Length: 491
Image (tube, rainbow, N blue to C red; front, side, top):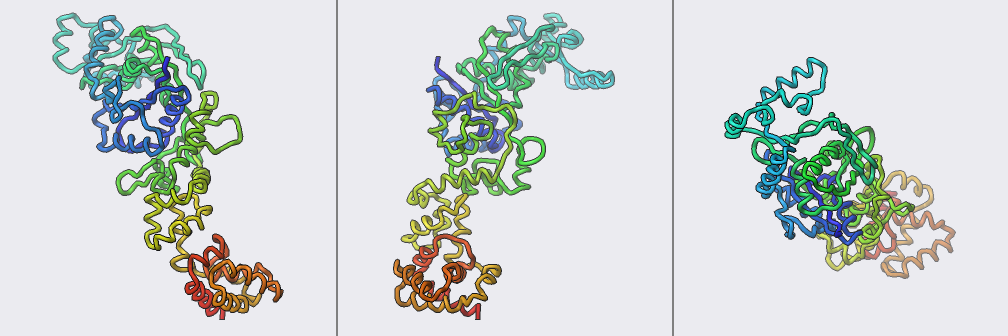
């Protein structure tokens, strides 16, 4: 049997990285088993629909290299892949349940239901519309055929008829057996008053008709698992495998990661920019390889100490056995560290084709792009760091006073004057380093003093990329001017 999985987001705004992680685990499970990865858009709640969300989701998946095999954009033999286009399918299937007596019409008004809830609260009871009280309400189980036909001309819903006194048992690949008494499950609404299906009904019908073999989703859906099993049972269908993923937790404290946490601590929670004021990981300088690698580590490991996995590695190694039960705490600094690895690994010529890199480099001559990126690449944790790491090439940083204090009483002016002589004589070629080191040895000047004085003059700080490569990029005239400026500053 071909493995078929689906990522089924609702188009209610930008895709949270928790949703992207769910998509990734679905994609990896499909690829590991030579299966099919499907994108299905669950847009039955039209009140929450946000224009542009579906395109955003598709682009986010494509940016990460997870191109759906089937979906609204990619097509396929099991469409439509938008739930809003499948109304006739849901109507047909709910009629099957009505005919079997596994579902029924309910005509209760919102006022009547609210009154029942208030009464339950007064009695300190939990309100459920189910086997214990459904005969007290206005529905097709309590009305005559004539009354039912009259009420069907107005607003109504269709509810699942849950049989009491049963133990519902479902196996989850991550959690093991989940058991719930059917007495604790409401007669959930399957079709709403607007004629559209609820999530619970539509996802079961769609998963069956699209031949989904494994449902992989977030653990927030775990409480709904017994209900979904009851819907499968009502149809007489075999259910797929289930795998509920751990939550992505906020960096500190309790609860799952939210946009508010990102806004508060200065990191994104979306893969791509959403509108003008909400940057994503891409706009913050992450490579898709770094994004995918870090997301894979949020709730999964391969049993080794290795933390670097390309998408191809993950496709081969991903296994449900490596999925953890507990929540995975989000760590932005670790995400940056993972991304740093991929920035270093990516060839310089590829990096300079990145639009975010090109935007930062546009103030420099094109012939220097490769040299500049190669110079600072190992210092970049995100591509956005390139702006800060190359700023000294345009103008040196303000002199680091702590650094100046380290060399001030060690006669740095003598060193800098000799550097000026050597720059005039040797230029910025390979001979400069050799001649400078030879002079320092002859004069008994510690190399540390030489390099610190030279670096402060060119960069303004004691840290930075290779000093002689910096000198070569700046050129002889600029280097001489900066050394002379530092001599003036010191004297």
